[in-house]
Image (cartoon, rainbow, N blue to C red; front, side):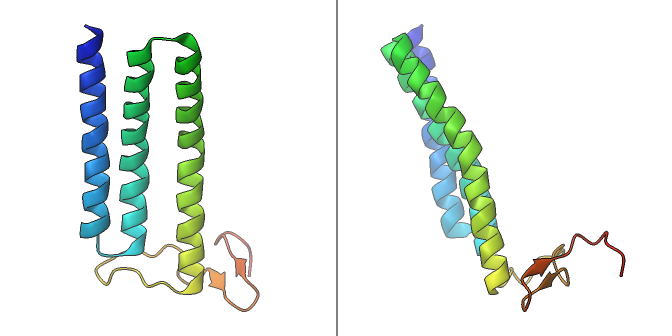
Length: 121
């Protein structure tokens, strides 16, 4: 039974990582690539690590695996957000078919201030 769980988790993890790799190639701009790879790769790595933790069935290894998964879940979105934010502020263009740019007009490149849209003029 354990082998079936390990095979299932590792296969699903590999599929999510494959989807992340395909997303890097297929997505038209940096912002969509960041979104796809962060979500799919984090889930894929988490599933493969969980499969490894179950396979070795040692509490010390499982504790390390869970710590790594938590660390990945906390740091990957923050890193992707910072890369996307720096890209936007340095002028990396969005895909021409993007319909909404919520930051348009909110950033002052001279003072590097970002308005929230709620302050009074």
